[in-house]
Structures are given as C-alpha cells and as structure tokens.
Amino acid sequence: MNWSGGKDSSMTLFYLLQNTEVEVEQLFTSMNKEQQRISMHGVRRDLLEKQAASIGLSLRVMELSETTDMEGYRNEISKHVDHLVQEGFQATAFGDIFLEDLKKYREEQLAPSGLKVHFPLWKRDTTELMRTFIDLGFKSIVTCVNEKFLDKSFVGRVLDDSFLADLPPNVDPCGENGEYHSFAFDGPIFNKPITFELGEVVYRKYDQGEDADLHTGFWFQDLI
Image 1 (cartoon, rainbow, N blue to C red):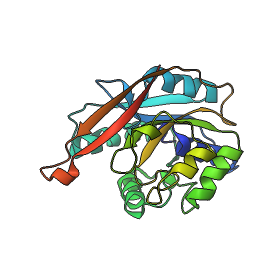
Image 2 (cartoon, rainbow, N blue to C red):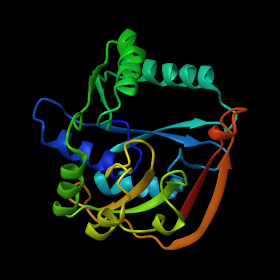
Image 3 (cartoon, helix red, strand yellow):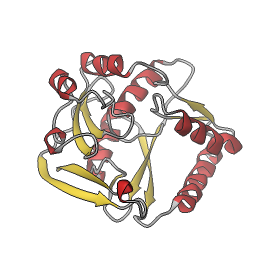
Image 4 (tube, helix red, strand yellow):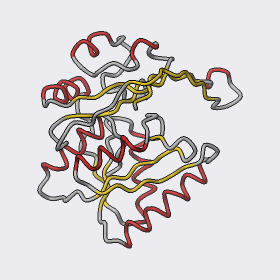
C-alpha cells in the first residue's frame, strides 16, 4: 500500500483491512533523501517507522533526491515495482479520491507490471469521508499547508470538527487538491498511539517553473 502517513492513507488502509479479498503486507513510502522526511508531508523518518511498527506492517522506503526530475522518479518507481513483483506482490493501493488524471497516470504506469491497482476511497464524498475519519476515532495533525489555499494558522492543528468548520469554501475537506497534508497518530489501525512533540513552524517556497504563478509557498509543522 502506498503510504504517506496521513489521513487518506489511514482511511485507505482501514478499508483495505476490511476487504477479505486482499491481504495487506507492506507499506510503501517515498522520502526526501537529503531531509529524511516523507515527501510533501515533511514528517521525519523515525515517526514514519513508528507508524509502521504500531500498525504491524513492514515498511519499504523509496528515497528521492531533491534534484530528482520526472524521468528519475519514473525510473525509481519502476525499479521498486520490479522488486515487488519479484517478491510475489500482486496488487498495490492508493488513497486517491477524485483526481481522474492522477488515477489514470498510476494505472498506466503500473499496467506493464501486471499489478492490480486498488483505490478504496475512489469517488467517496470527501465531507462524509472526513466525518467518518473523525467518528472512527482517528487522530491526525496538519503538517503542511499550501499558502494558496490556507494560511499559517491551519498548520499544526488536529483534524476535528472545528478544523472542518474553519476551512474556506474553496478548500476540499480532505485536501485532495493538495491544500494540506497530515500525520495520523492514533486510530483503529494502530496498536498504540504515536507520541511526538511539536517543533518549529517553517516556511518554504518552491519554484515550479519560470511563471511566477507556479512559485508556491508551504507552511510546515515539524514533529519531533
């Protein structure tokens, strides 16, 4: 299962574990090689490893350099997929909800491997999904927000009813458009809560092209 450590991954795994037709054996996470943090979520590797240990599944990490381009990314993915197939894995799963292009890209990239692709959250209502997440007893904290959608005050908040009520109308409740990312630290898939302390809040800006509109800033809540 492709695991980012956040709420969507947690709900994806929750539904997969209820599916008697599949057996989940491993979590797969991409990580910034230099920073040793989960890509985009900014969560430290040791917390990721604590998640996997609490869930009771093995963890496979794909380390990507900050300078890795799309071709390099595809090459790395291809190598890991080859290893998975050689080890006997027959399927993979993602937490995508409604981004058609992303779903199509994943399916096309994995088609040559023969791996079946599962999307347990696909087309679920995102408001209902977040309500279910909270009602099930999951707990998650916001570790990254995109400044195009949310201000600094949202990073470091726990996902609860008040968080949902404060979201602007243009923000998807699940952050499916990349508005925010989170770290799940408790809930029915965990054998015990993940403990951590709040570190500093950091602002980073990323250049995504010559167009100034593609220069995006993010607020990150460090977890220690």
